[in-house]
Image 1 (cartoon, rainbow, N blue to C red):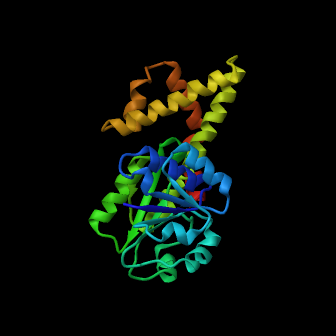
Image 2 (cartoon, rainbow, N blue to C red):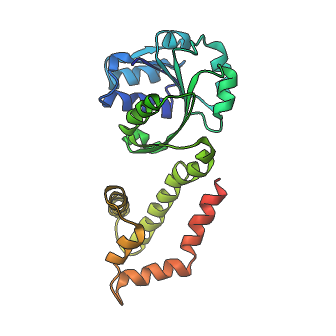
Length: 257
């Protein structure tokens, strides 16, 4: 499969690097287009074999799949300038807020289109990527899921859930980082150096996530394992509840919807 990525910014560049580190797409089959030649050269230095160009049309000419990694307000302009074979090529858009219906109106109502919502951890191959599709076969859906599973965890969902799940994933990662920041400050107050505290907490967050992802379990079950009667953990958890921690998380998620 030949892939063209339009846009070499933070997300487009991260996807290009992720593809290059994966096993499904060969580097020689990746082309990245962007007006910033320096960004393109950085990608080529990261993974030899990637083709770079400042001309979007050159990138998509022979591509099977086009990944559109540009700002939402540029989507219509850029797609309108491209000559796309809507029967042969597949379009993947990561532009926030642009629906499958809107994309189909710009290109073709018959084109196979995917709408993706990754998060910033894609740069570490640890993204939670949400995928919705239009006019796609089961095989095409599975192929896209497989590709983005190599950059973290990908999940196919109905487009109607995109807004709610974006709050959980793209916005949610910021809430996790907010916890890490706050916990680090607590560590500093208790006499731990900031960098050391931050590493301890980040690893603890990673460990908690691995417990959920790698086992058929539930947060409440794992919490019970570390809360002994009269122990220090239950005292801290009760303080969180008294301060409205759970309610604050739920309200934050709903506010991001």
